[in-house]
Length: 87
Image 1 (cartoon, rainbow, N blue to C red):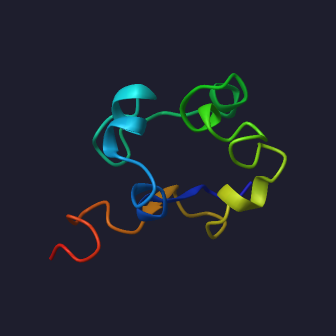
Image 2 (image 1 turned 60 degrees about the horizontal axis):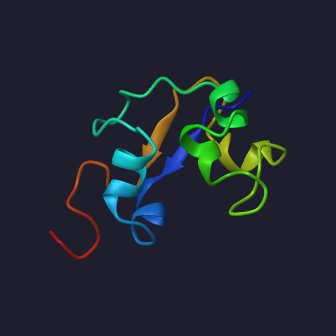
C-alpha cells in the first residue's frame, strides 16, 4: 500500500484548526499521530468525516494513499508555515 499524503491546507481553508485538533483528537505536531485504518473505519480521526456521506469513505484507497511507494507518510501543504498568504 502506498503511503498516505495528507493535504493540510486543502482541509485548513475549509475548517478551523479546532475541528481536527480539538474535536477529532489530532495532535498539533506533524507526524505525532499514529492512525490506523481500524481507527478510520471506526469513525475516529479521518473517519469522522470520511464516512461515505460527509466525504469519501475508505473504499477510495488511492485518494489518501497517494504517495510514492516506499516513502514515509507525510503532510502536503503548509504544515510548517502560517498558511497561504501569511508569509
